[in-house]
Length: 528
Image 1: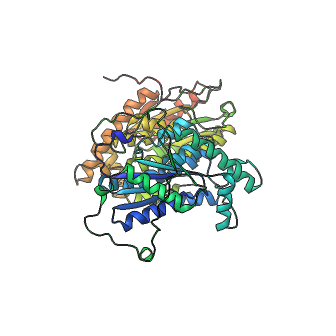
Image 2 (image 1 turned 90 degrees about the vertical axis):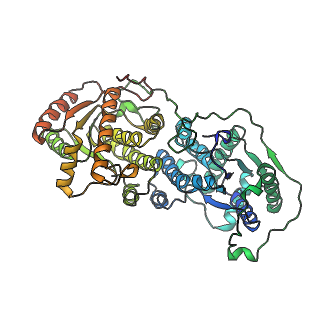
Image 3 (image 1 turned 180 degrees about the horizontal axis):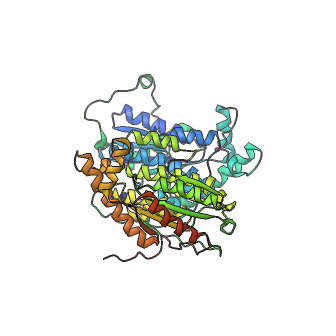
């Protein structure tokens, strides 16, 4: 995460509140917001899991209980990235005080308790700024539970940690789950400079402590609105009592400096993300993850084969998948197909977001990663465990190439996909960009916005943008072909000629040839 000392262009201030459910943090940040608004400061509020692009998918996943620890982590990070790019970062650059009801630390705590790798989770959020002030509202578990039950009759499924099977009793599960979260919060409090507030004290006492510390840490005069800001009607008749209370805040000393990457540019952007390597997981089986992989997966049980066909739209990739599927079934191999944007969890929402042309590179990476992880856990791994041949119509290589071409840091993108299985074989259909354009225009009469790289366009000429973008994509695939040892096939030929070559290569793989064993954390191949 980007430390506060590294910020060079942000004139605003970021204040976050953290704590277990029932800690009263939401009440306190609301009162702080109300006070700042009434005093005429430029202040904006944002809360966890509130992105208009993502929250629909998150609600669906929770309601239908589709979320695993990995997809739970990724979908919330996607939500955060969208809000960070479109709301938090622009407002900080504009000099606003941004109040965040939960920040990245919620993920650091919840995802780790759910079993995700700590370094993988922190890498996901490494594009985010460290807040100027983070308040942690520390409260006894019984007090938190009593507060929640005062407002509603029952606990929520994920709030109580019922997905972790800690207890069949929701109340006991809540105690155990929230207790585990509380331990993790205390573990990271010193590292991230939390201001610990005793949340068992009266609310007005807590609020006075919060205001005292904000006033001490931040020069609020720099964030005064130039003209009076409109006051919401509900605030006109409300006023927080300006009593003076003894400050009860405790600032945890900085035990060690925050480890953060060194930005390549003066202006910090979402493309500037940290890089960290993960050890290679090898339990003696033929299957491997690129990094630490997914929790609770026995690789030795995965007896099937994972075969990937990569290529741009118009390369004939989907046609070849269809032909291979039919051929393998004739030979007696049970076969299933997978591909991008096919997840039950987020495919519809991802497609809707793409139609709006509003996705930033980071949000798009994480949205696609959520789609991929859902299919990996619910389709690919179960099929491999059952001995199927899995044909992937695109895999993580397309996703990584797209984001690198869009300016994302290669190491960050690779680490996002360290959860992926290494395929048994990868075949890339390389096609001349002008031939790709001709095939796409013949098929649909138009060029796709994203496949043309129009979100990073340098001119209004869509055809030329398509050619330039596809040239960059092909160059990135050529580089990856060396790094990941997959085969490049001439896709300029007829479908039948390509199929004959692919069929021959696939049959060799099915004769138990060893899988690709290249890893993300391996030394990159040198290029001339």
